[in-house]
Image 1 (cartoon, rainbow, N blue to C red):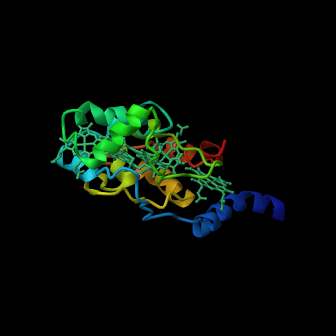
Image 2 (image 1 turned 90 degrees about the vertical axis):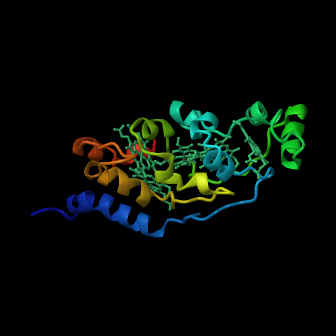
Image 3 (image 1 turned 60 degrees about the vertical axis):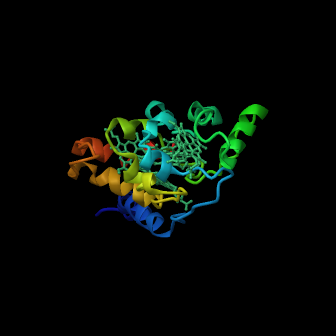
Length: 183
Ligand code: HEC
Ligand code: HEC
Ligand code: HEC
Ligand code: HEC
Ligand code: HEC
């Protein structure tokens, strides 16, 4: 006869995932005002500046990163130098102080995420962050819950097409191991 403990060892992880997926908090729609009124719709939409021009960290490692204010001045020493929002950027650079951008997407410390493997696998920024190039002010598009992460990691092997590389089934199974996201 199968012992109850063997049964629960087998079922517990699956049950835990379901329970956690159901009751996690979400910050979907969070769109705090920013210290400088910077618009992705103007820059990534209208001007078509590539995401990676500013968020080059996403290709290289864990964090996409926010560009230093000096990157803005690559253009804004010439373009709209007298615009009041651009003046704030120049003041920050002159003072040697970073602009205190308000962080929007933030996982708890116990969860590990890394941009690099996602970008390398061809998952587009928009898959997780929504149509940022249409946003005047960035808002959190996805729930960023464990259930959301696992759903894609599990179904990855079934998906094909634009913006998503096919994950082989064995790899997709490995991607749902707890240790992948909890070190
Ligand atoms: C010219 C530089 C620039 C470009 C190009 C750019 N961004 Fe940004 N991005 C910023 C700055 C500055 C911030 C911080 C202020 C804000 O939230 O708007 C930011 C914030 C973000 C955030 C929110 C970060 C957080 O705190 O969670 C996301 C997500 C993001 N960008 C994605 C994108 C995507 C996707 C693209 C391309 C479609 C893109 N960005 C293009 C400069 C840029
Ligand atoms: C698979 C989903 C996913 C993809 C694809 C993705 N991101 Fe993110 N992004 C996240 C998550 C999750 C966080 C929060 C990470 C954390 O708190 O450790 C985040 C955070 C950010 C941040 C703020 C914090 C940081 O890491 O610097 C920026 C900016 C950002 N992403 C930009 C981008 C850009 C630009 C791309 C495309 C090149 C992109 N992201 C692709 C899920 C994704
Ligand atoms: C590659 C060049 C380039 C970079 C880099 C760049 N901008 Fe711009 N920005 C422009 C241009 C061109 C315009 C004018 C767009 C128009 O009027 O159609 C503009 C417009 C603006 C405006 C006024 C228009 C509006 O309504 O948003 C602000 C404010 C601004 N940028 C802030 C920033 C900040 C902050 C950064 C850095 C995070 C930045 N820009 C980076 C080229 C750039
Ligand atoms: C839209 C699909 C998608 C979403 C959503 C997603 N991922 Fe991924 N994840 C992938 C793909 C694709 C890979 C790369 C697999 C490969 O390298 O073959 C990956 C790889 C990873 C890796 C590296 C695994 C390794 O060891 O190779 C980590 C860590 C990770 N994801 C964490 C997360 C976390 C945490 C979240 C949620 C905050 C998340 N992912 C959301 C598709 C996704
Ligand atoms: C693909 C990434 C991923 C995998 C795989 C994963 N988790 Fe998570 N987990 C997360 C993220 C992201 C969070 C934070 C989300 C939240 O709390 O909103 C989280 C949160 C948690 C929490 C805290 C919940 C809370 O309410 O604070 C526990 C406990 C947990 N996970 C256990 C597990 C166990 C056990 C497994 C394996 C069966 C597992 N995780 C597999 C991404 C993952």
